[in-house]
Length: 61
Image (cartoon, rainbow, N blue to C red; front, top):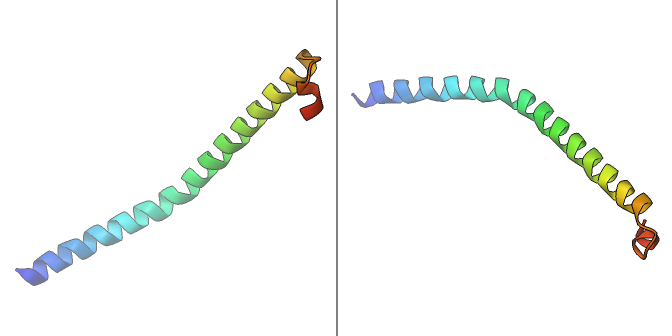
């Protein structure tokens, strides 16, 4: 029975490995997209604050 368990675990491992290999590039693209979007949002917010305020924050920008 131990060899049968080993076979089953090997199959599970191979299935999950191929699944992960297929998912990883997709998740990388999603992460890149999210990072770019949030960076642009932060930059937009900062520039909006800079243009809106004529106070000391202007110096930081």
